Length: 307
Image (cartoon, rainbow, N blue to C red; front, side, top):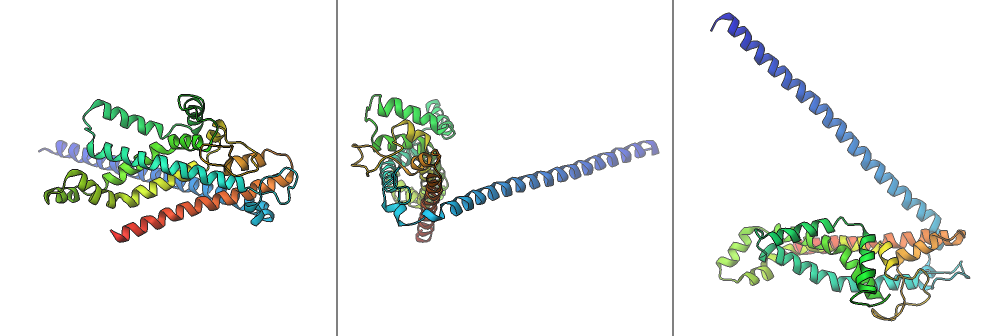
C-alpha cells in the first residue's frame, strides 16, 4: 500500500469517526433537551393539578361538613344544602356498572387471549376495534346510550341502569385491554406445567392463570371505574337530572343524579353559595376517587403477597 492510499484510508477513517462523534454529541444534546421538556411538562401538569385542588379545598372548606352528605340539594336553603341524592345516585350507578362490565370485560379478555385464533381476520378486526374504542370521546357513548338504551331497542328510559350501561360501554374497552395484558403477562411455563400434569385448559385458566392475573386485572378495572365516576356528558344525555331531592328508588325506577352532574349544576349557577358547594363537591369526588385507587393498590398488593 503506497503512501497516497494510506493517507486516503486514514483520512476516510478519521472523517467517519469525527462524523460519528459529532452525530453522537448532537444526539445527546437533543436527548437532554427532550428530557428537559418532558420534565417541564410534568411539572406544569402537577403544579396545575395541585393549584386546582388547593383552590377547591380553600373555597369549599366552609361547606365540608356532615350537612354536605346528609342533606338533599336545595335552592332555598343554600347554607345547609347537600348532595345526598347525588352520592346515592353515584353508588347505584357504580354498583350497576360493576355488575355489568366486570363479567363481560373479563370474559372477553379470557376468550381473546386464551381461545381466539389470532390468525383469523375477524379476531384481528375485533382486536383493532377494541383498541380504537378505548380512545373514543365519552360524549359519543352518551349519544349511543341515548339512541340504543334509553330510547332504542332496550327503551329503559331515564333510569339508573341506563346510565350504568352507558358507562359500561365507555369503560369496557379499557377493562378488556387491561385484563388481556394481565393475562398475557402470566408466564407460559405456568400454563405448560399445569397442562403437563393433566389439567384441562379451562382448569389451567381458572386455577392458575386467573389467580396470577388478578392483581393486574383489578388495578386496571378500578382505574377504568375511576374514569367512569367522573364523567358528566354521557350521564346528561341519558337522563341524569341536574336537580333531584330524593334518593333513587332502584335501578329501574325513578329519576337520579350523580356527583359530577350535581357539581356541574352548582358550578353553572351565578350565586356564590353554589360556587362554594361546587368546590366542596369537587373535594368529595376527589376523595371518592382516591379511596377507589387506594382499594385497587391494596387489592393488588394483597393478591401479590398471597401468590
